[in-house]
Image 1 (tube, rainbow, N blue to C red):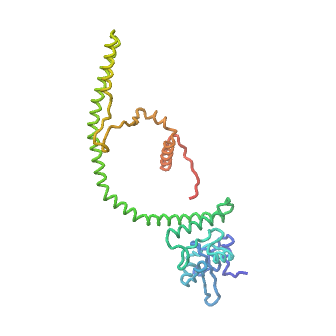
Image 2 (cartoon, one colour):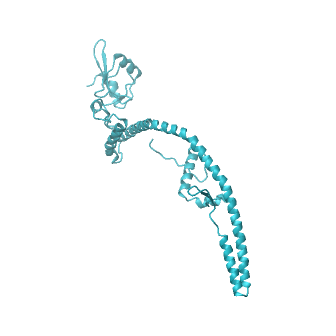
Length: 326
Protein backbone atom coordinates (compact mmCIF):
# COMPACT_ATOMS: atom_id res chain seq x y z
CA UNK A 1 0.00 0.00 0.00
CA UNK A 2 1.44 3.33 -1.03
CA UNK A 3 1.82 5.91 1.76
CA UNK A 4 0.61 9.50 1.61
CA UNK A 5 3.83 10.59 -0.07
CA UNK A 6 2.60 8.87 -3.27
CA UNK A 7 -1.00 10.16 -3.00
CA UNK A 8 -0.49 13.07 -5.40
CA UNK A 9 1.27 10.85 -7.97
CA UNK A 10 -1.43 8.15 -7.63
CA UNK A 11 -4.19 10.67 -8.25
CA UNK A 12 -2.42 12.12 -11.29
CA UNK A 13 -1.86 8.61 -12.61
CA UNK A 14 -5.62 7.94 -12.26
CA UNK A 15 -6.37 10.96 -14.41
CA UNK A 16 -7.50 13.17 -11.56
CA UNK A 17 -6.50 16.78 -10.97
CA UNK A 18 -5.47 16.84 -7.31
CA UNK A 19 -4.28 19.91 -5.44
CA UNK A 20 -0.50 20.10 -5.10
CA UNK A 21 1.06 19.60 -1.67
CA UNK A 22 0.35 22.43 0.74
CA UNK A 23 4.07 23.02 1.05
CA UNK A 24 5.11 23.54 -2.56
CA UNK A 25 8.75 22.96 -1.64
CA UNK A 26 8.01 19.29 -0.89
CA UNK A 27 8.53 17.01 -3.89
CA UNK A 28 5.72 14.45 -4.35
CA UNK A 29 7.01 10.89 -4.52
CA UNK A 30 6.35 8.96 -7.71
CA UNK A 31 7.47 8.29 -11.26
CA UNK A 32 7.34 10.99 -13.89
CA UNK A 33 8.11 11.92 -17.44
CA UNK A 34 9.52 15.44 -17.84
CA UNK A 35 8.85 17.79 -20.73
CA UNK A 36 12.18 16.87 -22.31
CA UNK A 37 11.08 13.20 -22.08
CA UNK A 38 13.59 12.42 -19.33
CA UNK A 39 12.35 9.84 -16.80
CA UNK A 40 12.21 11.03 -13.21
CA UNK A 41 11.86 9.03 -10.00
CA UNK A 42 11.19 10.90 -6.75
CA UNK A 43 10.94 9.57 -3.20
CA UNK A 44 11.49 10.60 0.37
CA UNK A 45 12.94 9.05 3.44
CA UNK A 46 11.31 9.80 6.76
CA UNK A 47 13.31 11.68 9.33
CA UNK A 48 13.37 14.98 11.03
CA UNK A 49 13.30 16.66 8.70
CA UNK A 50 12.41 14.12 5.94
CA UNK A 51 14.93 13.84 3.07
CA UNK A 52 13.85 14.02 -0.57
CA UNK A 53 15.60 12.30 -3.48
CA UNK A 54 15.22 12.55 -7.25
CA UNK A 55 16.90 10.56 -10.01
CA UNK A 56 16.62 12.08 -13.47
CA UNK A 57 17.60 10.70 -16.91
CA UNK A 58 18.04 7.43 -18.75
CA UNK A 59 20.44 4.62 -17.91
CA UNK A 60 24.00 5.80 -18.48
CA UNK A 61 22.88 9.41 -18.15
CA UNK A 62 21.06 9.31 -14.81
CA UNK A 63 22.02 11.84 -12.22
CA UNK A 64 20.88 12.53 -8.69
CA UNK A 65 19.41 15.99 -8.35
CA UNK A 66 20.69 18.32 -5.66
CA UNK A 67 18.38 19.30 -2.78
CA UNK A 68 18.21 22.86 -4.15
CA UNK A 69 17.23 21.59 -7.62
CA UNK A 70 14.61 19.27 -6.11
CA UNK A 71 13.10 22.11 -4.08
CA UNK A 72 13.06 24.42 -7.10
CA UNK A 73 11.37 21.75 -9.26
CA UNK A 74 8.81 21.03 -6.54
CA UNK A 75 8.02 24.71 -6.05
CA UNK A 76 7.53 25.30 -9.77
CA UNK A 77 5.45 22.12 -10.11
CA UNK A 78 7.45 21.18 -13.21
CA UNK A 79 7.97 17.52 -12.36
CA UNK A 80 6.17 16.36 -15.49
CA UNK A 81 3.48 13.77 -16.18
CA UNK A 82 2.82 10.84 -13.93
CA UNK A 83 3.73 7.42 -15.41
CA UNK A 84 3.52 3.92 -14.03
CA UNK A 85 6.52 2.42 -12.31
CA UNK A 86 6.64 -0.26 -15.02
CA UNK A 87 6.74 2.35 -17.79
CA UNK A 88 9.40 4.29 -15.91
CA UNK A 89 11.62 1.23 -15.48
CA UNK A 90 11.14 0.20 -19.10
CA UNK A 91 12.18 3.67 -20.32
CA UNK A 92 15.08 3.75 -17.89
CA UNK A 93 16.48 0.48 -19.24
CA UNK A 94 15.63 0.94 -22.95
CA UNK A 95 16.76 4.53 -23.14
CA UNK A 96 13.45 5.71 -24.62
CA UNK A 97 9.71 5.56 -24.01
CA UNK A 98 8.75 2.44 -25.91
CA UNK A 99 5.04 3.24 -26.04
CA UNK A 100 5.25 6.49 -27.94
CA UNK A 101 8.84 7.07 -29.01
CA UNK A 102 10.91 5.51 -31.77
CA UNK A 103 14.02 3.59 -30.77
CA UNK A 104 17.03 5.84 -30.23
CA UNK A 105 19.63 6.38 -32.93
CA UNK A 106 23.03 5.00 -32.11
CA UNK A 107 25.37 7.96 -32.39
CA UNK A 108 29.15 7.94 -32.68
CA UNK A 109 31.00 7.58 -29.38
CA UNK A 110 34.72 7.78 -28.71
CA UNK A 111 36.26 4.42 -29.51
CA UNK A 112 33.14 3.17 -31.35
CA UNK A 113 32.98 1.92 -34.92
CA UNK A 114 30.39 4.53 -35.89
CA UNK A 115 31.70 7.00 -38.49
CA UNK A 116 32.79 10.41 -37.29
CA UNK A 117 32.54 12.02 -40.74
CA UNK A 118 29.25 14.02 -40.75
CA UNK A 119 28.12 12.60 -44.09
CA UNK A 120 28.79 9.00 -43.15
CA UNK A 121 27.30 9.47 -39.67
CA UNK A 122 24.07 11.03 -40.95
CA UNK A 123 23.88 8.41 -43.71
CA UNK A 124 24.21 5.66 -41.12
CA UNK A 125 21.55 7.27 -38.91
CA UNK A 126 19.15 7.58 -41.84
CA UNK A 127 19.70 3.96 -42.84
CA UNK A 128 18.88 3.02 -39.24
CA UNK A 129 15.74 5.14 -39.32
CA UNK A 130 14.64 3.59 -42.63
CA UNK A 131 15.14 0.10 -41.29
CA UNK A 132 13.50 0.70 -37.90
CA UNK A 133 10.50 2.59 -39.32
CA UNK A 134 9.60 -0.11 -41.84
CA UNK A 135 7.46 -1.99 -39.33
CA UNK A 136 5.36 1.00 -38.26
CA UNK A 137 4.84 2.02 -41.91
CA UNK A 138 3.77 -1.47 -42.94
CA UNK A 139 0.25 -1.14 -41.49
CA UNK A 140 -2.29 1.59 -40.71
CA UNK A 141 -2.07 3.30 -37.31
CA UNK A 142 -4.75 1.95 -34.98
CA UNK A 143 -4.08 3.57 -31.60
CA UNK A 144 -2.93 6.82 -29.99
CA UNK A 145 0.38 5.42 -28.76
CA UNK A 146 1.41 4.36 -32.27
CA UNK A 147 0.30 7.72 -33.66
CA UNK A 148 2.41 9.46 -30.99
CA UNK A 149 5.38 7.31 -31.90
CA UNK A 150 5.02 7.97 -35.64
CA UNK A 151 4.60 11.71 -35.08
CA UNK A 152 7.66 11.85 -32.83
CA UNK A 153 9.56 9.81 -35.39
CA UNK A 154 8.66 12.22 -38.19
CA UNK A 155 9.91 15.14 -36.11
CA UNK A 156 13.14 13.35 -35.29
CA UNK A 157 13.82 12.47 -38.93
CA UNK A 158 13.00 16.10 -39.71
CA UNK A 159 15.75 17.13 -37.31
CA UNK A 160 18.05 14.68 -39.11
CA UNK A 161 17.08 16.34 -42.39
CA UNK A 162 17.87 19.75 -40.90
CA UNK A 163 21.30 18.50 -39.84
CA UNK A 164 21.89 17.05 -43.31
CA UNK A 165 20.92 20.35 -44.96
CA UNK A 166 23.20 22.27 -42.60
CA UNK A 167 26.13 19.94 -43.30
CA UNK A 168 25.45 20.11 -47.04
CA UNK A 169 25.47 23.90 -46.95
CA UNK A 170 28.62 23.88 -44.84
CA UNK A 171 30.41 21.52 -47.21
CA UNK A 172 29.17 23.38 -50.29
CA UNK A 173 30.01 26.86 -49.00
CA UNK A 174 33.73 26.87 -49.93
CA UNK A 175 32.85 25.69 -53.43
CA UNK A 176 30.18 28.36 -53.81
CA UNK A 177 32.54 31.03 -52.55
CA UNK A 178 35.24 29.80 -54.90
CA UNK A 179 32.71 29.74 -57.74
CA UNK A 180 31.59 33.28 -56.94
CA UNK A 181 35.21 34.39 -56.91
CA UNK A 182 35.77 32.82 -60.33
CA UNK A 183 32.57 34.44 -61.64
CA UNK A 184 33.60 37.82 -60.26
CA UNK A 185 36.94 37.47 -62.01
CA UNK A 186 35.62 36.39 -65.41
CA UNK A 187 32.16 38.00 -65.63
CA UNK A 188 33.39 41.44 -66.76
CA UNK A 189 35.42 39.87 -69.57
CA UNK A 190 32.50 37.63 -70.61
CA UNK A 191 30.05 40.54 -70.53
CA UNK A 192 32.33 42.83 -72.54
CA UNK A 193 33.09 40.10 -75.06
CA UNK A 194 29.40 39.16 -75.45
CA UNK A 195 28.47 42.82 -75.86
CA UNK A 196 31.13 43.32 -78.54
CA UNK A 197 30.03 40.15 -80.38
CA UNK A 198 26.45 41.39 -80.41
CA UNK A 199 27.41 44.86 -81.60
CA UNK A 200 29.65 43.54 -84.38
CA UNK A 201 27.00 41.06 -85.55
CA UNK A 202 24.35 43.77 -85.52
CA UNK A 203 26.67 46.03 -87.52
CA UNK A 204 27.36 43.28 -90.07
CA UNK A 205 23.67 42.39 -90.08
CA UNK A 206 22.75 45.85 -91.32
CA UNK A 207 25.06 45.39 -94.31
CA UNK A 208 23.82 41.82 -94.95
CA UNK A 209 20.19 42.96 -94.94
CA UNK A 210 21.02 45.74 -97.39
CA UNK A 211 22.71 43.23 -99.67
CA UNK A 212 19.69 40.95 -99.42
CA UNK A 213 17.34 43.78 -100.38
CA UNK A 214 19.48 44.59 -103.42
CA UNK A 215 19.62 40.91 -104.41
CA UNK A 216 15.85 40.58 -104.01
CA UNK A 217 15.30 43.63 -106.19
CA UNK A 218 17.71 42.31 -108.84
CA UNK A 219 15.88 38.96 -108.85
CA UNK A 220 12.51 40.68 -109.15
CA UNK A 221 13.68 42.69 -112.14
CA UNK A 222 15.22 39.61 -113.78
CA UNK A 223 12.01 37.61 -113.29
CA UNK A 224 9.98 40.43 -114.80
CA UNK A 225 12.33 40.69 -117.82
CA UNK A 226 12.36 36.91 -118.30
CA UNK A 227 8.55 36.81 -118.14
CA UNK A 228 8.40 39.52 -120.82
CA UNK A 229 10.76 37.55 -123.10
CA UNK A 230 8.74 34.35 -122.69
CA UNK A 231 5.57 36.21 -123.60
CA UNK A 232 7.34 37.46 -126.75
CA UNK A 233 8.48 33.91 -127.55
CA UNK A 234 4.92 32.65 -127.35
CA UNK A 235 3.82 35.37 -129.80
CA UNK A 236 6.77 34.87 -132.19
CA UNK A 237 5.93 32.94 -135.37
CA UNK A 238 9.51 31.98 -136.15
CA UNK A 239 10.51 28.93 -134.10
CA UNK A 240 14.17 29.91 -134.24
CA UNK A 241 13.59 33.37 -132.84
CA UNK A 242 11.16 32.00 -130.25
CA UNK A 243 13.83 29.55 -129.08
CA UNK A 244 16.36 32.35 -128.83
CA UNK A 245 13.97 34.40 -126.70
CA UNK A 246 13.37 31.45 -124.34
CA UNK A 247 17.13 30.84 -124.04
CA UNK A 248 17.71 34.48 -123.23
CA UNK A 249 14.97 34.42 -120.59
CA UNK A 250 16.50 31.30 -119.02
CA UNK A 251 19.95 32.94 -118.91
CA UNK A 252 18.52 36.02 -117.21
CA UNK A 253 16.76 33.87 -114.59
CA UNK A 254 19.96 31.93 -113.85
CA UNK A 255 21.99 35.11 -113.47
CA UNK A 256 19.57 36.28 -110.79
CA UNK A 257 19.46 33.05 -108.80
CA UNK A 258 19.87 33.85 -105.08
CA UNK A 259 23.25 33.31 -103.50
CA UNK A 260 23.93 32.94 -99.79
CA UNK A 261 24.76 36.37 -98.44
CA UNK A 262 27.59 36.04 -95.94
CA UNK A 263 30.51 37.97 -94.53
CA UNK A 264 33.83 36.79 -93.14
CA UNK A 265 36.46 34.29 -94.18
CA UNK A 266 35.89 30.50 -94.10
CA UNK A 267 35.13 29.12 -90.61
CA UNK A 268 34.68 32.68 -89.35
CA UNK A 269 31.54 33.68 -91.24
CA UNK A 270 28.40 35.53 -90.28
CA UNK A 271 25.25 35.18 -92.35
CA UNK A 272 21.54 35.85 -92.20
CA UNK A 273 19.36 33.10 -90.76
CA UNK A 274 15.61 32.98 -91.07
CA UNK A 275 13.91 32.16 -87.78
CA UNK A 276 10.24 31.73 -86.95
CA UNK A 277 8.90 33.83 -84.07
CA UNK A 278 5.38 34.27 -82.76
CA UNK A 279 3.72 37.65 -83.02
CA UNK A 280 0.57 37.52 -80.92
CA UNK A 281 -2.16 39.53 -82.61
CA UNK A 282 -5.10 38.14 -80.55
CA UNK A 283 -4.09 37.33 -76.97
CA UNK A 284 -7.43 35.82 -75.95
CA UNK A 285 -7.50 33.50 -78.98
CA UNK A 286 -3.88 32.47 -78.43
CA UNK A 287 -4.52 31.75 -74.74
CA UNK A 288 -7.59 29.68 -75.61
CA UNK A 289 -5.51 27.64 -78.05
CA UNK A 290 -2.85 26.95 -75.41
CA UNK A 291 -5.10 26.54 -72.34
CA UNK A 292 -4.78 22.74 -72.24
CA UNK A 293 -1.00 22.72 -72.51
CA UNK A 294 0.64 21.08 -69.50
CA UNK A 295 2.96 24.02 -68.80
CA UNK A 296 0.07 26.51 -68.94
CA UNK A 297 -1.97 24.40 -66.50
CA UNK A 298 0.96 24.12 -64.09
CA UNK A 299 1.58 27.88 -64.26
CA UNK A 300 -2.10 28.70 -63.71
CA UNK A 301 -2.23 26.31 -60.74
CA UNK A 302 0.84 27.94 -59.14
CA UNK A 303 -0.64 31.41 -59.60
CA UNK A 304 -4.02 30.26 -58.25
CA UNK A 305 -2.43 28.72 -55.14
CA UNK A 306 -0.49 31.93 -54.57
CA UNK A 307 -3.68 33.97 -54.78
CA UNK A 308 -5.58 31.62 -52.44
CA UNK A 309 -2.80 31.72 -49.83
CA UNK A 310 -2.86 35.53 -50.03
CA UNK A 311 -6.64 35.58 -49.57
CA UNK A 312 -7.27 37.09 -53.01
CA UNK A 313 -10.60 36.03 -54.63
CA UNK A 314 -10.11 34.45 -58.03
CA UNK A 315 -12.80 33.73 -60.61
CA UNK A 316 -13.21 30.05 -61.43
CA UNK A 317 -11.42 28.93 -58.26
CA UNK A 318 -12.92 27.31 -55.15
CA UNK A 319 -10.92 27.44 -51.93
CA UNK A 320 -10.54 23.91 -50.58
CA UNK A 321 -9.12 23.35 -47.11
CA UNK A 322 -7.01 20.21 -46.74
CA UNK A 323 -5.75 18.71 -43.51
CA UNK A 324 -2.09 17.84 -43.85
CA UNK A 325 0.29 16.47 -41.25
CA UNK A 326 2.72 19.22 -40.34
